[in-house]
Length: 200
Image (tube, rainbow, N blue to C red; front, side, top):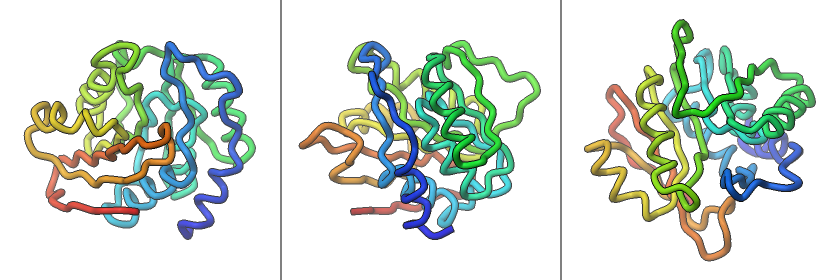
């Protein structure tokens, strides 16, 4: 699938009508979502024929992008029942088979489910400090391959300390955030992933 086609399909998805501020809900725009997943697949092979988890899936944009790019199985996790309802409806519209689990990511228990890649646009921690790091910590526990995550630029130093060394690419301006805000997309790979990418 071509990048523009992927972005177009993601642009048709239903989004939050009344985002819950306490959960730091905000939509993941089709521009950034399509580029994140397209890069994950075409530069690293982390999507097609893989089991992909979308942590804090919200309306399902990242997970659905993975499904459109040929993921073997996609699972969306979110604490909010309304988010899962919207994401499920979006999956139906795209005729994609995606599973959804309502849970607090901090209490996630996966006994028999192998996950290759985790994609996420977690809470930034503006309401609850460290919420983004809770998501990253769990993602690293469950992903056997790579983790792709969107963060505020202020998370960079904390993340470098948290992970040691990792590969990342910077997106500026990041259109899913408020005006005059710059964000970072992290790719945390487990094996032979030494690459730095820049995107406009």
